[in-house]
Length: 114
Length: 111
Image (cartoon, rainbow over all chains, first blue to last red; front, side, top):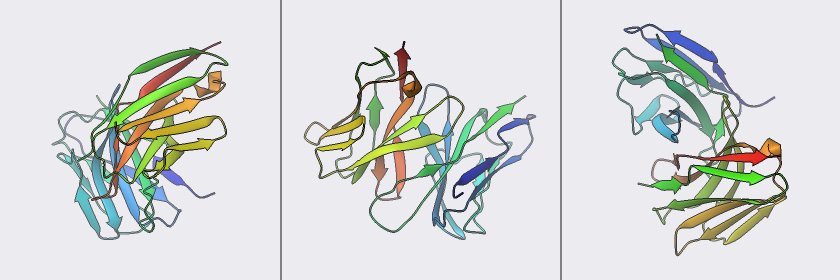
């Protein structure tokens, strides 16, 4: 089955720790995205990557870092510099060919800071 | 950049039609999307409309686009309890190929 997987589903972090959220896709998509969702709010863009070894900051990149060493993988690290990291994190991917930017989403990771 | 707004809550009875509304600011958005999110899950693409279209119908779903007023709506016919979810509209930021989402409309379907 083609799709996007995220792991873990739930993640607990102590204050001051870095944690890495995994995102893998087998859709052969060039572009991948990380969004953050807070209760009662829409999704906000953290980072995005349109090609391997390249990525750009989104609207709320402070306290986060990413890498794109492989086309299939786009891990997100939540660093200790992120002041309020408790949220639901969603990864998405899309093609870069064509005009439509239809994005496919993973099931999400819920991060809680203890 | 794009700014997208939605009403927060809608309650309907099973079998009725639901209409979820959205307004956007960036008239250069080429595509506008509707996504559905069930509790604790990711987003599922329901449908999208190209900016040169006024209407798109897909089974129980009808999307209407009023470009003059920058207004987008999603109509769900014969609403079922399984349609209870949060619905997001989104516009494509063509500059960076990312999506700008509204805050979501929670649809509650009462039996």
